[in-house]
Image 1 (cartoon, one colour):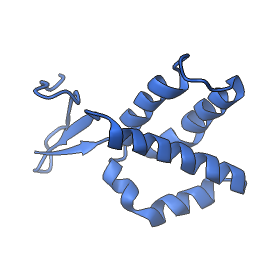
Image 2 (image 1 turned 120 degrees about the horizontal axis):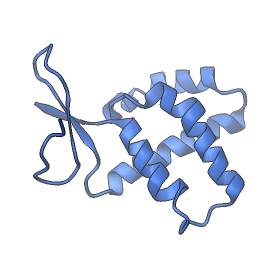
Image 3 (image 1 turned 135 degrees about the vertical axis):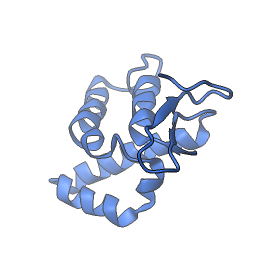
Image 4 (image 1 turned 90 degrees about the vertical axis):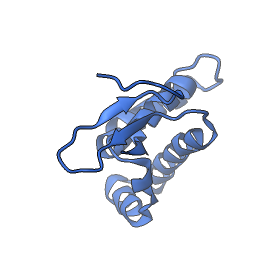
Length: 120
């Protein structure tokens, strides 16, 4: 089985560790903007995508151009997605999903922790 990092799971970790963390100094309007951008724009499109799927820059750029009503919104969405991906690069154990090698097998989620057992 192959393993994949699922973008939506990373986004939720980023939200918990950064946006919703009272120890992180963010202005209330900024927190609300991040939540709104995640919930209304980013997660509906990318939550079930593998992180590797975001390497298709044309797909991401096409989505940004379709989704955004202004240059500022495009920059916001791109920066939020970049922050989420950066967290995956510096995090110790990003959440992964074991993907089946054969068609028809179901996915099993596992923690990012070493030696973790699949959740059922």
